[in-house]
Image (tube, rainbow, N blue to C red; front, side):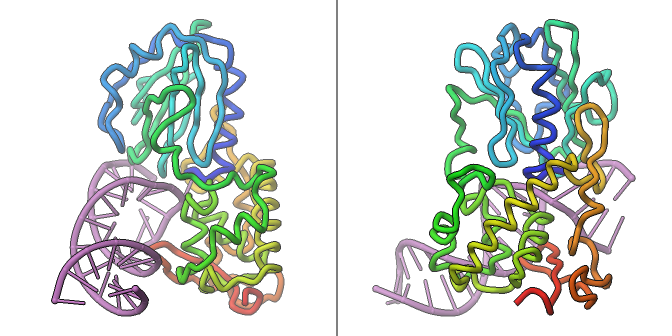
Length: 268
DNA sequence: AAAGTTGCCTGCAAGC
DNA sequence: TGCTTGCAGGCAACTT
């Protein structure tokens, strides 16, 4: 499911039901996720008050009393479901709060993870690049991240150390909006192109968040509502269909093993 | 059949 | 020659 807008949508859905509450009971049905769930996962979290439900890149970051930290990643197919029974298919972890609220983490492909950190820190959060919607994300910062790279700009933007939170969909949409070919060497982009890219990334992410993310298959808000940004895709998943700008055909190719969609005329 | 993820692995090429 | 670095590609987890 989830790139930055989808995770942000999940965070926003979880915050009102979790913030200020305590975890009363946590049941782990499966410990063998992408990385093993710690054996003391439930024991560490139970009884603690939830101070903040946050997000960094594609990670959910939940701060609790005593400096405890819950780190979640939804992988490809992970969902957080408010009010779930906890016994549905692939509901690997069930979180119960002290007001009787229940949230289930469901993930058929089990490519997500749930782990513990401390004092706002976790090894997986280190080395992440700038948050694209923060003020600190500027053309100068992105230029720095791309400098000297021979790698294709498509691949560079998927690198979470260059900019945090973009995935296959939003890289494709951002490069289209900026008019830049995904095949260009990252280090070859000119200043004005990087400026356009920063603007495009921000705009695409903000529009996607406003739409509740994109629902291709698995993504849903925790309350069950679906995102609808997929109806606004200019290029993603639209191979052979007309480019919204020039009417030429959208082309699909494979880069670093992932599908790339672009318009060969509008993206130079 | 291909899919929104990402850490780890291999292999290759280039640079020093 | 070997060592390092950068990059591409494959794999793994599963269901639809």
